Image 1 (cartoon, helix red, strand yellow):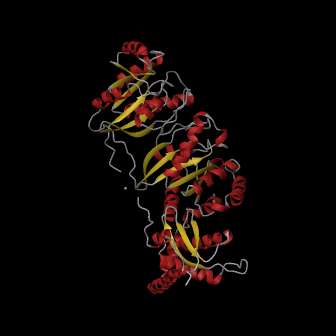
Image 2 (cartoon, helix red, strand yellow):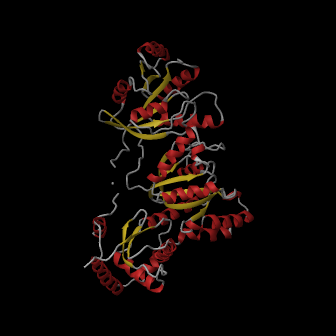
Image 3 (cartoon, helix red, strand yellow):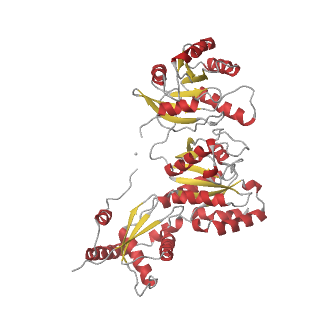
Length: 508
């Protein structure tokens, strides 16, 4: 365990920047401000573009702010596998949000969306197929559907009108009756008036009028929604915690079967996501608002990213696309690695996917309870060799299944978010670069030596810097500048972008 403590020191390096900040005196600030003004005035001698002037005036900044949706009523869409529940969800939302494929069992977790019809707002919960007598993964999926019914205000029961009421539908009917929730019966796959006779046969279920619809083509869905919103209460019985725009979103990403859903369940303290030994269990991103150490976070469980997306087919293909979208919509990504297995090319690709998206990054070695001392040493060497380009990312070791050391995740997340949102005053940035260039000037190229005229931070999330120069800066020198920026100002857990704008002197 001593090795564990050494490996986890990266999560605490955010304190280095605080020490540098305290050594920066008022006199230093005044001197740097005067120097920055002189450099800014010197830029007037160079040809500047309109976008340069906009950047220098500070017009390119970021700002982040959603209505309280927690009291909205909730509708759970339930039914057997492959009756068209996710297709109906997409039809109601007006966009392809849920993974849909012409095979049973595509949806597995319960996934909550925000929907609206005729001015009424409500939560829409997509569930996996419910069936009787199932075991293993299918049983876990059915249990999630039952939880969705218990938390909903209205149940929308979807039946395949072409097949008619099956024994499973009749069992579902008994379950819905016992819940004492309002139930609306949707007879799906009614694509023509001729097929409406099949829908009428569903009166035998004893749940009232069956509403014939075609979720695929939209036929009858408007009439169904009119009935649905009339059955909704003004306020939901159970609060649905949906994140505000200011709540940090954390994407749990990694290869299949590295323990992403287990970690979400461990942090939530409940069986929020379906967990199975079968790789690729999760398909739709699952959002959960959690309060950890007094602060709210949105954790997004995602589908495992497989070896080659071009070779991924069916539901897994769309799941990977949604995982990419989840990364881009998050502020920070927890990349989970299986500590008991060798680091793979796909692990590195997942890390690079997060970096390319510009998200903050925390690397988590999971299943640490299965890692012996020899494997610890091998894993350390593997990560030094293959993940050297993200040595700025906090690294922690946990066992999600038992909850061991999962309490260290919040500290690592906060350090990464602090680095991701760090802004350096322009005066201090130029003072730093002036000292750096004086001590380590750019090498001569073709008898000329490019100079850095001025620098400004164009934005945060991630930190982006623009250097105005007299010539092109070699990639090696850019990496050198980035490394020294990190040593001085931190940027723990965050990518850093450095752009160069070469400008020539004005002709007199």
